[in-house]
Image 1 (cartoon, rainbow, N blue to C red):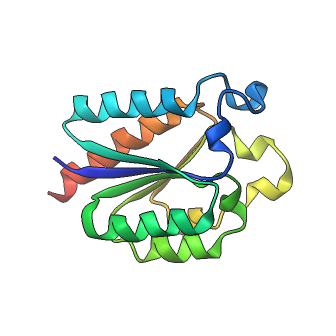
Image 2 (cartoon, rainbow, N blue to C red):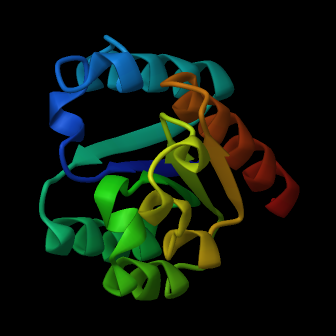
Length: 147
């Protein structure tokens, strides 16, 4: 049984209420429920976190270094701005899957660049909140290959 961290960046606490035409109507609580159910089905555990603060995300990535087999991260707006999150992820030895609910490549040009992608082992974008479950499946697959 592996432990995976599912990390969520700024404004994702408003999921389901903020721009539902882009992000859908599911809430972050719905996403967490679905991720926990899938993790259990796959025989794994998750720690699910969200913060609007860059430092909190970095602290969780540091914590993951000690206990987690992989990280699924939706860095939200920090995707395009945070070298600090990139550096923290580079210090993590396990797989990292970057998740975006919307297809960032169909949006404003500044969203086309991701610092996190420089470290990510995979990127899932445009699959809605299902992208989180796809990321967990990929982490489980990579975890099984490593053991």
